[in-house]
Length: 155
Image (cartoon, rainbow, N blue to C red; front, side, top):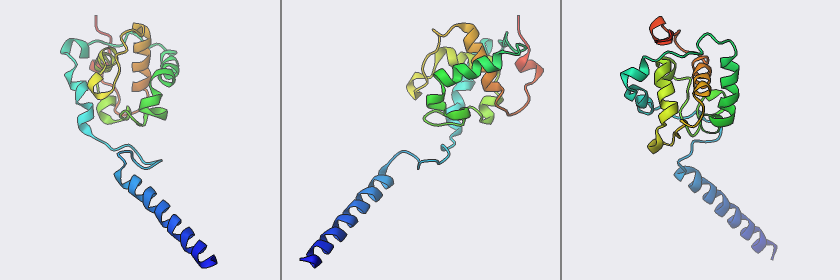
């Protein structure tokens, strides 16, 4: 009787381990704590911003409070997908060179129009100054120093 109970316990354990292993091998999700997979194609949408949009300067570029305000907005609206500190999650990292090197106007255009087919919502209902605050926050995360051409306000 004891031998049968022990054999049953061992079989149950093997089945449990097999199920867990099978799920982990077929899951599309990266392992917990793993860095999101880098895919340069995900950033191609920034290049689709019209030239007129790319040339727009951030009117809040020199506003010392814009980064902090943008950080609060990021936590409220963006962190769920782009992760803590914009390092990526369901959505791509906003610390990537493609984003940090993009013109503020291109980022603003993406925020305004979204990339719905890839899961990025349209934020056009967010007031324009708040979208510019988000751009300031995103650009403050690091990467190449902005050039005068990409950061200077345009008329």
